[in-house]
Image (cartoon, helix red, strand yellow):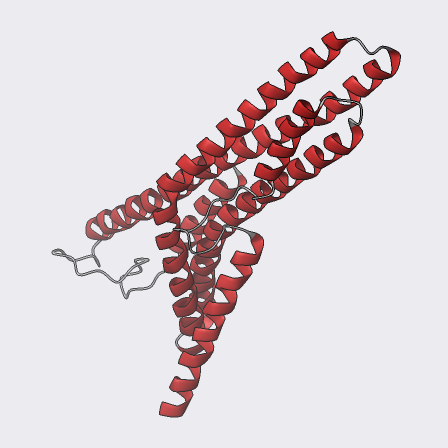
Length: 264
């Protein structure tokens, strides 16, 4: 919700920062005179509709995508708790009695955990197929936009208002990428926690049959590969990836600025 309101605030600031001689937020080629009151009102409403539609709808779509990633993370957290409670509960019961029914109950609960983990992996792969290409294009376009915006701020921004307008657009683009990387990093972290929980369960259940330990080891081995959403398979969405995109954008910005200084 805060992310969407940030987009609304950025749009509002952008719309009330004139860029043309008529006072419009964009420089437009219009078939009518925008210096007149009616023409200005029509042109400004057109700018408002286009800006809010593009920015807000983009942020709503991003919010929907990260909500699915957050749902996967919550499923991993629930599975983590199931494994921890399974190990603790069975240890307490086995210390009191050695009934084989406890082993059958443990095996049944463990089987449900394994199936739950398989379903999470399947959904993560499906989400990767749906969003991978889009996230790659989004990451590349945001990186390029950040580079050009920094170049504009450094070379062609005239006055505080224009600088603020460029910075507003820059922060909106970076926020869009940061939200995806933040939730993607949480998914990776929760997946790693699941592997640790499975390892602790294996080491704590010494008196269990080999079949149960084998199932836990299989779950732990699958969890060794952290679940992540990648940008088209090139890099995972994580906080480190966000910093890497910023570094690349700044590097290209520095190159462009050096070329500009040499031309002058």
